[in-house]
Image (cartoon, rainbow, N blue to C red; front, side):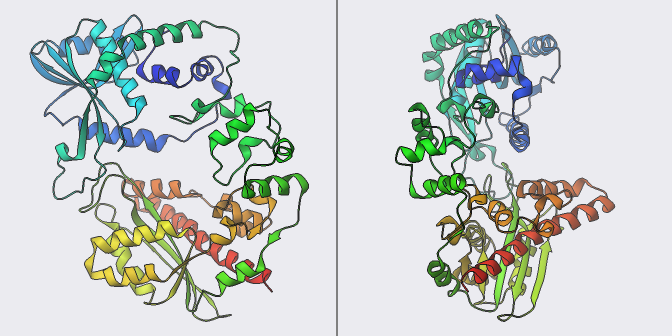
Length: 492
């Protein structure tokens, strides 16, 4: 088989996944990795300049052309080559950064992550094996990751932004292992009948496998892998290996945990809604008027572009705000969507937010850790708004607990307390609360991508997209209003 470094890593994770990619690609579920690919491309583009000017080997469907271009670039005595391409016994790789000094070479595998992972070491070790097998004198092998603690201050400092992890000793130690892995993968891929390998931790470690649904197609529906409430995958696997796959099997064996057992019982026996009025009322009694419902939209980029921010820091660019000035009063709405596409959208957002939410007002959010973290980060960035933003933090209340704690549970929630699960469970027949009825933007990552695309659009396209972004964010806070009203209703 013709192996690449990505196929090699797939084979390391699960050889059956590689087999299915080749023989049954139609069975894979679509996993949206576009943001991951985009981040990787952005990081690679910046990392190219780590050692100065480079010769980049352009991608070509004909890999032999890339190899020829690499051979030509290697004619230079001292050179930095990006995407240098090689093939040894049908084992192909493109090295992110290859540094040549005289007759010695250094490999740099660039990742858009802030953590060094075993799979990255396997990736770089495969490249080390290919190049050394071809006779290259590789003296160093590195995995380059982002420094999560780097803060942009002026121009990008590439030496501070990136961390170069020397994994040369690992690559040397893995030479025989890589060779053995390649032989095992090639032998495995010769099978024409589908292998019957069982599922296991490899299904989601280190990456989610797109064939998991296919490989579990013969299990009962629902089954142990449909259980929510943050039940660990290892625990589900343990039940599976012990032959307890259906909800009735699991409950008959003593169950998993109280929340998971509630989910299973409600789905098996179609139980009436679970409502703990005392706990719900105790929470509602902590809310005061005026009462504000707040939701942020944000984006993340691996390479910070805003002064004072870090890699992958959440950058808020939009909010929606529904509010009541008094109990049983009229519902009002305000919103903000930055048009500062090339600068810092957070400044204008903070300025408007401090105007829209008076100090000491009760502010409701859904899953408070996100909004609190964003507000604290922005307070640190903008001293002029610090006191007001931290005052908002001090007055935040969370709508999540009744659902997270199962003080309010219906089977339609399907083991999840997320607002995207709770809302349709509580209001199944209300089209005004259905995110599927929105145009262009239906979920958070689409809002993020939409904002990042705005600068490239025409004025007319911007206007249409902005309108749809506003409708999406507005629905997020209107959903909270409806959930709040439902909680008030059930305690009567």
